[in-house]
Length: 196
Image (cartoon, rainbow, N blue to C red; front, side, top):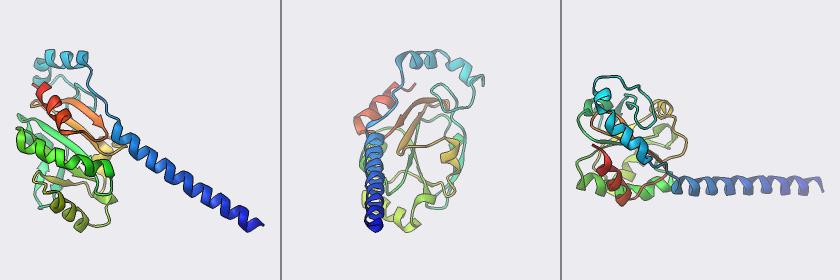
């Protein structure tokens, strides 16, 4: 009798864990944090303050994006600050994440159509191996840089919780938009066009 009760409890716990995992994955795919228009207007009016170095470094809209340096899958070293003067999209992702897989074709189309730098930061520590990442890139025909966050340092610096998480950084290095969850092509273009 005790074995049956124990088995029922274990099955119940596994069922709850699966439900919670599926539900949180679905929620992360549907959630995003849009930039409010008043924040965007404030960002545009403070451009002179930003270029003079008076804005603070942080993760909120209007902050200068924290700088980081990572290696690409090809072994090149990439630093966010090297892209000052260009519009940048930083995307945190992993191959095992269904919403990440769903948005990758749209990101590739966005990269091909618009003058944007995409830095796709792979949470490499969570992957089984690098071959899995390479296979994913080949499968989806991705041509933008894939950065390897091998010890999750940049993900921690950016306080990444749900993935995918994306940041749009304007040409002054300032966060103009951030989203939790996957984005589609039209939404990426919409936010790109709002950046100065």
